[in-house]
Length: 414
Image 1 (cartoon, rainbow, N blue to C red):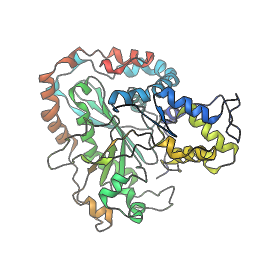
Image 2: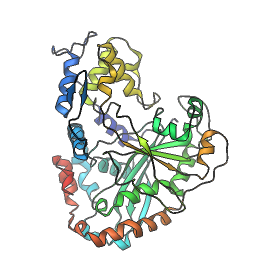
Image 3: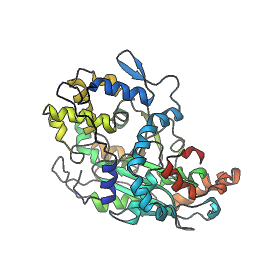
Image 4: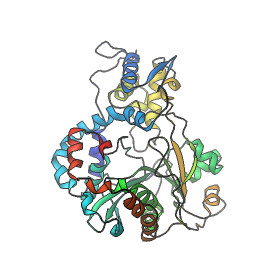
């Protein structure tokens, strides 16, 4: 991971995601209002929609897309509330960058990649559009590249994506590549993870998410990566590396992915389903509950409490949660094993990606294609045919974007 300037928009968004708890735990795990930390965690999980099963928690019945949305609904509501000042201040200006259905001629869609620069209008637009996601958007870790996809016919937003450092431990990825621990340590630098991917309405109604995802495999993105990171020094490992982007990974947000499924560009990138996550993590330990866990470690003098997001890697929150849970007598796995599995996809960006990642090859034979070629294929394959089968996108009113974010209304109405 590399040192870089901090985008004030991104920093403000991260600050908005941090909720300061009203109760401070004692070293024994008792909060100042007399409620034990164990009880606070239990009540939080039940409120989200989990059920108790022995010492662990689970989701009743089939884990549908709507159930996953519901599990994230409270966190999304908290984020919208904390971002309300930003939305009220900039919302009118930024909402003008969204198209109504009447502004779109599907055959004339002209996708343009716009890299997001710190402190720019594009940065504010990225932040604003990210609030539309029903599953709250991660802010990524370490290396980061953010892009908007805009439509040249009306200069409106089609969608967005962001690439960041991948997690160190991802068994589906590592087993598929065939990595040893040493291979992964030395060559994970050649991999990036897409932590935000999607289209905004009304382009989402035209399967625009496939277009946005496919553009991650463009030559323009690879070159942007090389300009920024090719010879940078890792902050954590304090060494220079020739970081060549040969593989992207991403995970589905809502179970089975309709965006990544069967997404393949002829003679270009393909989205390959390589497994699922283990339904393990900390997404459900957010806001005040996470603050209480971190505060507990701070009270006990644990070194994880004083860590910060940058330079600690993407597993910092997981380490904080596990250490605090086990310190108050809770088996960490009983809480962190939430059971919500996500599909894992790999997108090779080089013909010899496996040999590069195994250390056999140094020279990369790229599979990336120009954004214009990818766009043309996606329009012909998905977007125009969808518009001919279903014209409901034409009734979308871009004015609903701002009202939804101001009121926290259901995006499912789109």
